[in-house]
Length: 367
Ligand SMILES: NC(=O)c1ccc[n+]([C@@H]2O[C@H](COP(=O)([O-])OP(=O)(O)OC[C@H]3O[C@@H](n4cnc5c(N)ncnc54)[C@H](OP(=O)(O)O)[C@@H]3O)[C@@H](O)[C@H]2O)c1
Image 1 (cartoon, rainbow, N blue to C red):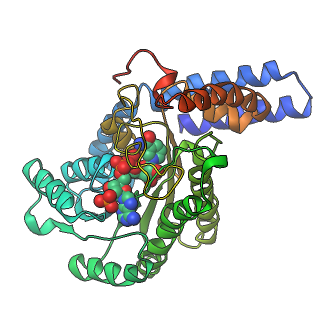
Image 2: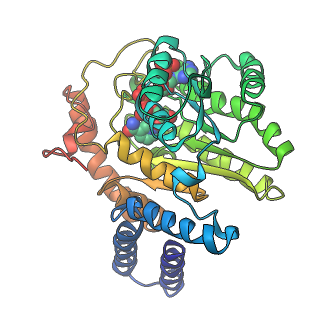
């Protein structure tokens, strides 16, 4: 409620400033204040507090009125649900598996590398109360769209239903468009966009039949803003945003189906190692330290708090990236100026063989 009210107040101020033709300074001030307040309420002071707050409410409601029990922490809301995670063999998907296992969710783990999925499964079993039969390893290639119907049927036959699909599998890009073959852009759209759409197409009818379920898609900060070295990647994530925003509105007759998109900023994972470059199958020459990025566990925790509380779009990032989202949304001219300024530096570093991301910070961030 606090978040909604803050956002509504901010929109009113910006609306007023826009129509009274006030100077950009006031708009930037409004956006900065909103970002700071939001960060304080939702992102920074964090969801840890939000989660424990909801847990307290849920406990009280259990005694007073069960009707309020849907205000929950991930542990309360996701316990026992069947959650299908794609890209579960590393990074964000792997951490999702661990935190969901601790919440008591039953899991379907998918990616291409079966041995990595078995490793993740074993770690889940060793660190939670789940039993062997609660975790299904289901190898899947998002590019093999003809297999998606069969994989979905296997998952449904095994658990009887799917409560949550987390479309997380995907790859990024580190290359200048002028030097990049069109096949790379095609591969990014095939994997990040069409692979996700194809799996959603199989799972969604099952959810509409039951009248409930959640489809959570891991987009990116570049699903909302532009970034050099990531033209094809940004296009694929923008496509996902447009697709799921439209789908959500098509599903207004199904109020218990949540369509949620998650837009993380830089997060520690294998994403840079696995990024597409100028040509298909050419690995990235330099991968710098990932320490300055948001820890994977932090990103996933915030994501699960959002999912448990039905948040339709989540922006999850440390500063200054979070401020960047707000600038793109509320003060685009200003955003273009800083994008050009930072982007030029990013491109120069890339040309000199320095990891594009690590160049922004000198001091590692730990939380
Ligand atoms: N890390 C970040 O900074 C960041 C920021 C914003 C958004 N994201 C998004 O977060 C998601 C997860 O990325 P990550 O950061 O965790 O990177 P990651 O560590 O490289 O994990 C990517 C996952 O995707 C899977 N995958 C790749 N190609 C696949 C295919 N053809 N079919 C099925 N699975 C495939 C990989 O498994 P296999 O190789 O075993 O198939 C792996 O499990 C991606 O959608 C990414 O765009 C990441």
